[in-house]
Length: 72
Image 1: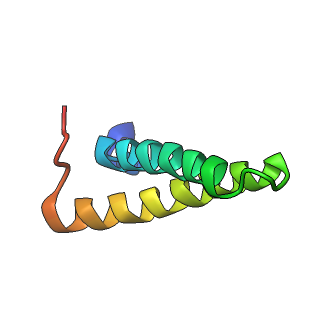
Image 2: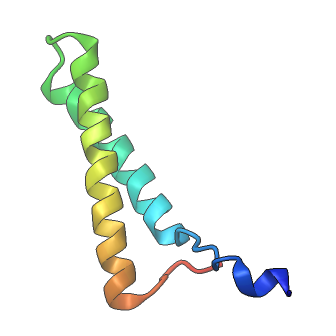
């Protein structure tokens, strides 16, 4: 039997998702630094993680609607 026909096709995450997650994560972190300056430092990391999650979801929506716009 041909092994290639039995293996499922690997799906790669488009680069658009990674770029938007990274950019919104950085923006979220710096927004957390500015807005939450007197709060404990883990709050800044939480703001960065929230930005990454929002960027990932937004990136997947962009890829679904427009395709991989940064496709290298």
